[in-house]
Image (cartoon, rainbow, N blue to C red; front, side, top):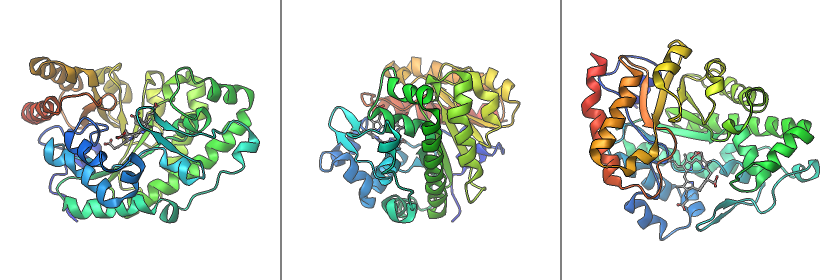
Length: 348
Ligand code: 1CP
């Protein structure tokens, strides 16, 4: 099916665009009253597993905010669940694996996944969403990186100092590598199935890459991201890698096979553009907290991001991490409108 507004896909491929495309990470979520209305009636995992609900909240930001891409509603933690780990989504406390994996014994129960069977609900949600979008904008599929998934599987929940996963990489690196290998297989199969089901691009979230030193990042995260990308069955759909806090490894990430690097707000787009030599497109990178400010501040900061990238294609406007749940949707609307109005002059 032809896509009516394909600015996002053209920018990913560094082809000419009339203006800078814009979407935001976590755009389908709690900051939207329309999302909360559905979430009141169903718990989070039920929403993920009910294609009608997942599809409805995926489309909300396209219709309400006017973003240039949709991202399928789900979570990165559905993979460990499909591999056999019990997952609880506790109200207010976030996701928890009550039986984290910290030893070879505990790792034995992890299964290889068949995404068409174990994550069929995601594929069904993608197909339903593609139908409902009727080609208005592209649909993005995503996964956690093997490293970020392992972090949750070992810690059992969000963490402050990541002591359990770090203990594993120093005390039993062989086990960490065995697990990362297994997870990489699952991620590659899962993303390949999502592409087959109809997503137009995929994003790999390496939220916790930045807790590692440069050499450990190469060994425990980058290596496996590269493996996943090389094992995708279809190669036409752009691959975005968002690795938070890895300013030390951007050139190496450029060689991972990614088409686009997602950047957090601690990096300067111009420097990264120079460093990566136009080999990849860049996505980002306004601090999500700017959306707490008045509209004139939001405009000023958004303009700084666009000016920092400069002229020409290859920039996808986004935040430097997910939008926060207490953001006023009106402020996001104003941001998206501003990027649409202001960006054509960077593409003359
Ligand atoms: O109560 C609720 O409604 C649940 C809140 C919520 C939502 C809306 C969670 C639990 N996950 C999601 C959706 C989600 N998660 C999307 C939706 C698509 C979109 O609109 O972008 C995506 C892409 C994710 C990805 C995700 N989940 C990441 C990577 C991105 C990031 O923000 O760094 C991570 C780390 C998770 C784990 C997770 N799931 C949920 C929470 C609260 C967390 C963070 C846990 C923690 O570290 O404490």
